[in-house]
Image 1 (cartoon, rainbow, N blue to C red):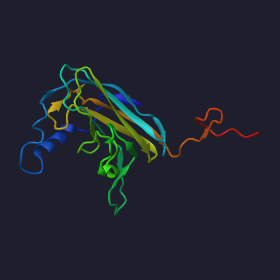
Image 2 (image 1 turned 180 degrees about the vertical axis):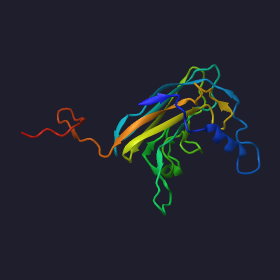
Image 3 (image 1 turned 90 degrees about the vertical axis):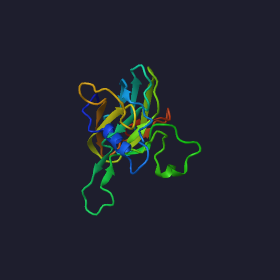
Image 4 (image 1 turned 90 degrees about the horizontal axis):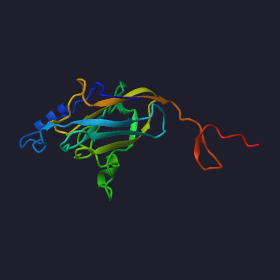
Amino acid sequence: MVRFRAAATLSLAALGALVATGCGGGSRQDAHEPSGTFAMKVVRARFPAKQAIARPARLEVQVRNAGTHTVPNVAITLDSLYYTEHFPELASNKRPVWVIERGPGAIATPPVESQEVSLPGGAQTAYVNTWALGPLRAGQTQTFSWLVVPVKPGAHTVNFLVAAGLAGRAKVPLESGTPLGGHFKVDVAAAPSTTHVDPNTGRVVVGAAPAVP
């Protein structure tokens, strides 16, 4: 289930403020991002509402430039891919709900040296859980796609937020007082469904294999 224009808990504007400040002297890192407001629309958003542990699933969000000017750098931030674990003495208290197997964007050819520690997909940014696919001309659409594997059962909500840039200068108008985005409600089963290979078609189908006479 997905709902658009949800009251998102994310803020790329806040992230942009951190980028503008930087970690020392020098010019502003957002100096080359155009200032302005850019109309955008979520055309489609898909993520299976019923999933199971270890079964890959695809999350897709397609956005369109509904304005008359090129969007500087269309970006999407995902929330709730991780949860906080409260066991003591953990090296990190962040644990995944979904493991990302492939993110948006083309994989570098040949693969870069950091690929093993950097998720495949060329749309990654320096921001946590934010992907950007570059400029988007007026009237055009862009699709963000993630291949993920759920690793924690239960009921979860994933929020997404659409932005026109990474530095906070290029803004998307609020819709009904909330940022442009939405959320998915997902139930992850503790065990994958039973499947078998149909001997007549060679396809994997859900359900137990029929008894051999």
